Image 1: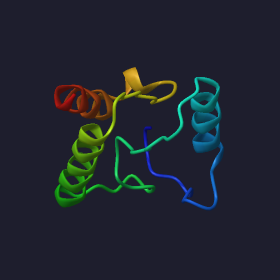
Image 2 (image 1 turned 90 degrees about the vertical axis):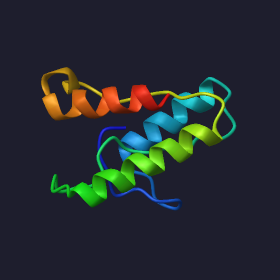
Image 3 (image 1 turned 60 degrees about the horizontal axis):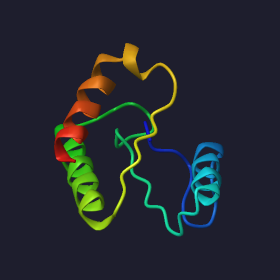
Length: 91
């Protein structure tokens, strides 16, 4: 998904719940959710960016299917498009 939220393993935010509910309808048993960007406040350091990409790369290696869900308007955000292209290269 696009950015970090308030969800964790016990409390889900609306976006996480939407993704999990739809994956359930598609009969996925397990979902691993990672974000394009590492921070909730938009402040991103090079270190946090590298760590985030590393987490994404590790998640890709563990799963059978990769579904990228980034919502509306991402194509207008140059930084998001750049990050999305980095993730597609990892796939």
